[in-house]
Amino acid sequence: MRLFLFLCLLFASCNSKEDKEKYNRALYRAVNNKDTAVLDIHINNKRFYGRYEISHYGTGKDSGDVRGDLRGDTLRGDYHYISFGGAWKRVPLALLKKDNKLYLGKGVIGTYFNLPCYVPEVPIDYKNPEFLFERIEKE
Image (cartoon, rainbow, N blue to C red; front, side, top):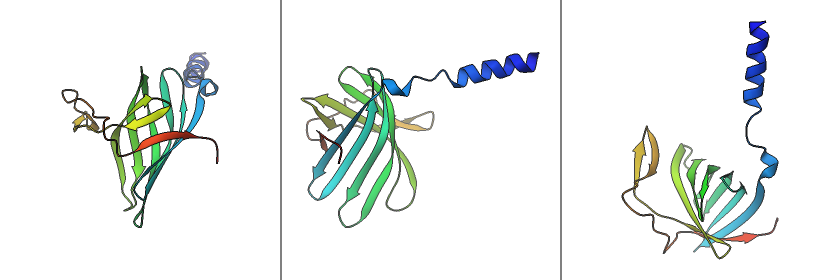
C-alpha cells in the first residue's frame, strides 16, 4: 500500500508542471553586421523557454536552449549552448521587450552557486544591443 501511495504521489508531482499549451510561440530574428541570430521562444505571462541560435559569419554558430522568467517587460534567464568551437557554455540572458522588439542586454557577469548571472549591483544596459530582435512570421 505504501508503494502504491508513493507511486501515485510521484506520478502526480511529475505531471504538475505548467501546461505548455498555455504558452504562445514567438519567432524573432536579429542581424548585426553579417551575424544573424534567431530566437524561437514559447512565452506566457510568467516564463519563457525555447531555442536560440547565433550564426557568426565565416566562423560557425552557437546553438542551444533559453529559459527564464518574465518580469514586467523584461525576460531574464539563461542561454545554455554549444559553441562553434564544440564546448558547452551557459551565460545569463536579459531581453527588454519594447515596441514589439526584443533588445539584448549587456551586463557584468558573476557567479551564484556556480551558475553565471548578472551582478545585481550593476544595471543591465539595453541602449546599444548586440542584437535587436524583430518578430517574424514562421519561415
